[in-house]
Structure formats: structure tokens, C-alpha cells
Length: 158
Length: 151
Image (cartoon, rainbow over the protein chains, first blue to last red):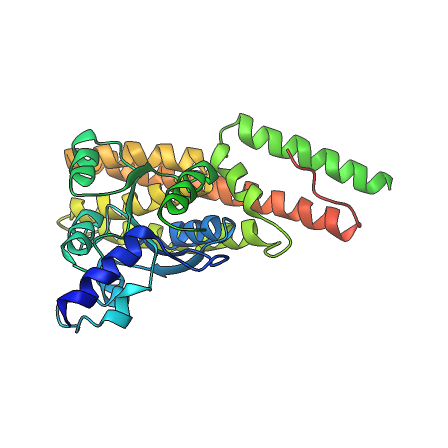
């Protein structure tokens, strides 16, 4: 993949030059089945297209960021506009997933939101320092999703 | 229309009592607000998922606590799951019991854990009963041609 197309993809994402009338696409990652159903409905009710993943590895796979996957420009570039992930997940935590996303040349501009049921300031700061857009204390509510939509509107023409 | 009005009254009173007795909290209202024409059974669907998932967790918990050498980390992980899902649907009493349960896990206190296990099972049974009753009243209202009051 040449450097020029890599740079233009990042610019494309950060300038948020999206088609008018397009729904933002959010990837929601959570190991809890009930929480996945809830986040999906909340986002869909907010006019978002939603894809869910049950753990960090599946999320990376979907984004085309798994270690053994080839990074193709078409693959990850237009896939998602935001990632929302639970912090406490078996295998890979939401923090580790955040780091992997921020390490990726293509995905690092995509806002990542972390959710947790536990209000631990050191955990929250750690995530924000690593580049998380926002930290949400569970349970997830409509007011949280309103905030998320606000963030998405800033990043794109939604 | 008398029948419908009576059922609606019953629904309102029952729902109010569930909130007052803390079986349900504000988060349950969030679920109800998400229900719409495109997804008229959303609340029942999510709660049914919750019942299935909770029963799975309770079985695994019973198993984990029955071991010669109890793996408290595993017990804690299971309780954490139950705490999360009960919180997400607004089942406050179950959630609060899970918090106490996790404290005993941290202390590796088997007596405390077994005690909490029993209490969580009781709270779960109660919540399940109450919610199923609520859904039944809803069904009766709809069958009688009425609409569910919004609280």
C-alpha cells in the first residue's frame, strides 16, 4: 500500500467528507449478549447502522486489523465511523482494543468510545490518554447515545 | 371498555409497585422508551434474553461453587456478567445482590458466597415472576383492544 493513498484515507476520515444522507456506521463491541442488544437498539433508534462484535479479536477481524490480515485500503477505510467498546472483556480488554486501533495507520482517526460499569478514575484516564473519544458509565442510555451522535456529527455530515 | 380501563389501572398500579419496591429502576424505562412500531416486542425480547442468560449463569455459578477448590476468580467473572445484564435491564435488586456477592468473592469467603448465591437465586425468581406478570397484563390489555399506558 503506497504512502500517498494511506494519507489521503486518513484525511478523508478526519475531514469527514461523507455523502449527505448516509447513516453513520458504528461497530459495537461487548461480550454481554443483553448489552449488545441494548447498544444496537439505542444506536439504530439514533439512525446509525450497527455491526456488533462479541470480543476484541472479532472486532479487529471485522476492521481488517488482525495481525495476520493484509491491510487493504478498501477493506478498512470506509467500514466504520465510530467504535464503541466495553472495557471488561475476556481475552482482549477494551483498552487493548483501543490501543490496537490507535496503532493502525488507517483506523487511528476513527473515534473510539469506551464503556464500563465501573467508575474507576485511573481506568478512565488511561483510556482518555490513549486517545479514547469518550468514556461512558454503564448502563447505556439514550442520553449517552445523544452525546455520541453529537460526536459523529462533528466528524461528518450526518 | 370497562374491562380495558380496569386492566390499564392494574398495569399502572403494578408497574408503580415494581418501581417502589425497587424490583425495577429507571433503566427499565429506557428499555420501554426504545420500543416502537418497528420493534413492538423489544422489551419482551430483551427480558427473555436476560432470563435465558441469567439461568445459564446461575447454573454455572452453582457448579463453580460446588467444586472442592472453588475458583473465586471464575465465580466473580460470572457474577460480574449477571451484574452487568441486570443493570442494563433495570433489575435493581438483582444488581445490588451481585455487588454484595462480588465482595465475598474478593474476600474468598465461601460462606458469604453461598449465602449470596441463594439470595441472588431468590431475587432472580422474584424478578422473573413479577416481569412475567407484567407482560401478561400487557397482553390482556392488547387483546382487549386497549393500549399500554405510558408511565
